[in-house]
Amino acid sequence: MKFKKYLLDWRYFLMVFFILAILGYFFIYQPVNFPLHTLVSVEKGVTIGQTADFLEQKNFISSSFWFVALNRLLSGGRGVLAGDYYFDKRQSLFTVSRRLARGDFGLTPVVVFIPEGSSIKEIAVILEKTLPSFAQEKFLAEAQAKEGYLFPDTYYFPPNIKPAAVIAAMEKNFNDKLTTLNEKISAFGKSLKEVVIMASLLEEEARQLETKQMIAGILWKRLKINMPLQVDSSFQYVNGKNTFTLTLDDLKIDSPYNTYFYKGVEIGLQKIPSIFERKIQCGTGLYVYRFCFT
Figure (tube, rainbow, N blue to C red):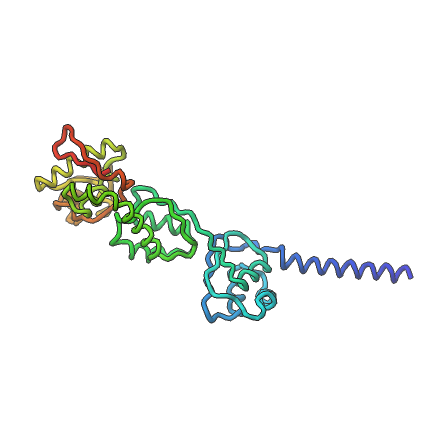
């Protein structure tokens, strides 16, 4: 009798242990190589089995079989809901199954800070580092014509945002800031394109406001007398060099970005100008035509 009781106790113990192990596997265990800060897109028409196989291959789950079983139980047989799912931390098999069954996308906005003076290439790097699966090359191609008109600021983007939406948000911000300055631009007598290009050149030519004001006055004077601007900042688009690495031979390179070679400001934009509210300021001093755009 004692032996039977002892055996029965062990059976209960093993059964409880087995149940706890299963619960731990479903609710607690998280794959060691779980991909963090990753966006998973589930397309319409994709089956539960295909989704389960993909998640197992990418280490989101440890068992495609149990994912399918849990998903059918939690979704009532509806399967996985199509959409973009963002995973910012490791999660258990049960949690992943429940999220895809209920459409819990986890698309909490991500803070993206774009510093003043950033080029579109620098913006693309920031976006790729901050947003999972961001199409950097597509952004560069679509933003090329908008460089200088994308406002530097702090943005809150969903993790699955597309390049076109980022460009639209930044351009709208630029235009919103511009509305309070339209009269000043008109009074200055220069086109918006000329003003923005000049401001973008000054971003690399100087850092202090007073220095930018002085240089701006000199450059507008050169334009007025039909003299080349002769600035070094545009050479980053010619051969990647700056003021400290340029040689006399570099100044002879035939390139539309060579402001020693070509006159005017139709060279294209290099950098996003500084805070736009400060951009248009006019002053007088030792330099004639000292109009400041910083």
